[in-house]
Length: 524
Ligand SMILES: Nc1ncnc2c1ncn2[C@@H]1O[C@H](COP(=O)(O)OP(=O)(O)OP(=O)(O)O)[C@@H](O)[C@H]1O
Ligand SMILES: [Mg+2]
Image (cartoon, rainbow, N blue to C red; front, side):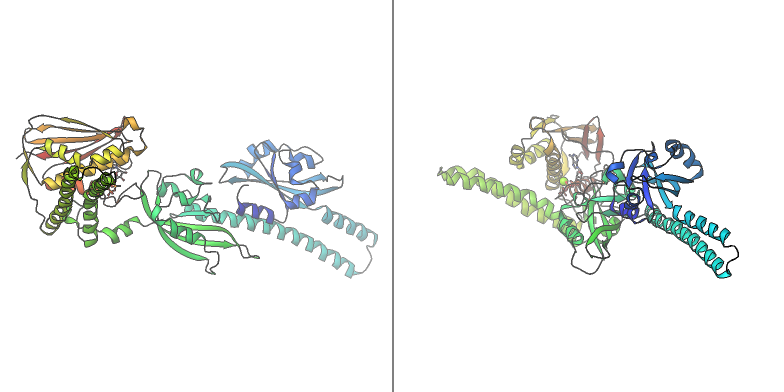
């Protein structure tokens, strides 16, 4: 048995109790067993239980063949203590399934009956001898006889109750739709109900021994640690809502009701139990309810909060470029180089600042009136110009960019700033996705070509891990992100912009480790 709760129960059984594996070897041995048989746990682990009996019992067969059919095997057995003393006890064998080890174990309990038997025998002799003695004597005998039987029944009942209480916990946990879990005070999982597979994608076995803090979203970690560490508070129940990373890599919101289990005598916290419920929809509803369908157009972003989030995202890019350019200027000046050389870089800085201003202006217009400010453009030059905005980021992350741009494509009518935002978002995502890829393999590929007689198509791919099938349906949901600091708005905005232009935006999931994003735009 490898968890505190079960070990405590095992030790709490009033009988001597022994756990056998299916080959009949001893895997655990409680203190009452030591008291009854005189062997310490260390002396018997791995040995056959027949060590303590005067005859050999076929335990492997009893465990593997008899118990699965008739649940319980009982026998009056003769035992020999380590010091040679002998006795009789009632041996009960039952099958239990340890949920963590996931293999059957046999629980053996021994109820000492030799004393009781001796007593009865002694009394019977005295009865024979003093058959004619007073009725009081006989009453006393019957009384002690019935007391002994009552004690035996009470013992059996206590054992049954303990086993039932453990079973009840597991039954409740296993049938709950919430994730029921038990943790050490440091947050390590010691038990999880099967429903964790549904909500987190992990099986209980994958998480046991693992720390819950590793799944918690970076921004929520502090409050979760605080909730687990409320040693001083008298309140043993509290709830905390936080994001956890699922096996697929995305985060979901969970409302967790935590219960601190204290040691009854000393009051310290022994373990923490938790019931967790997925409340993602409720939270997102609260934070970002979208009118009608999910973000079919950017102007559907309905609240100020969402609008601010979208704007912050788009403005952060020119701002980052301004910071980079300005740092470059400072370095240049620090080296005492000719300041007139700075004109070009300062002009670029101004251009970025103007771009940020334009983004605000355009987004404001777009949100308020849902209008696009279209101009006639050549897609290839829009792409090349946009790539130059993040040249420094491409260099810093050692990312190469390949263009496969079809010459002389027909012109398109687009809101250039918004189209640039789409391309920037896609390049930004590609850079982030390739962070784990080896340096020489970091490559973004951008292709343009005619799709049919009235549309062109633009395909962006990278050499990162690609989109797995599991997340492909979620990436357009606002606030869906697998990144610790992502806002989960980029792709939602991209698709909205393209659809607002009458185009289509599609993602090909990761097949043969090559995924791509493609969008079409109508010709003028
Ligand atoms: N090129 C890519 N390769 C692999 N996965 C990607 C790629 N682009 C996006 N993703 C996945 O799609 C998710 C959503 O992307 P999206 O751009 O909408 O949000 P984000 O990048 O997480 O945050 P932000 O709003 O800051 O851009 C990402 O978290 C990531 O898991
Ligand atoms: Mg992004």
